[in-house]
Amino acid sequence: MTKFDKNDTSGTSNLNELTVITMTMEEDYAAIKRKKVETRRMIEDVVEAAKERRATFDWTL
Image (cartoon, rainbow, N blue to C red; front, side, top):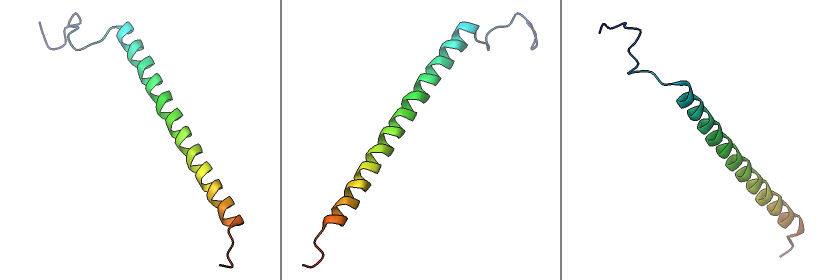
């Protein structure tokens, strides 16, 4: 077998393997994005709560 033999499939993947990998990567990406959105919303809630506490704090102590 030569270096450029067309029948050499040792370094290739079939189409099904590639689509499964792509779907898994998309699912992982979606999970990461959901986690980032969830984290951002939690931070926004904490910032909003801090603003409300500052607005109602009695500064005359």
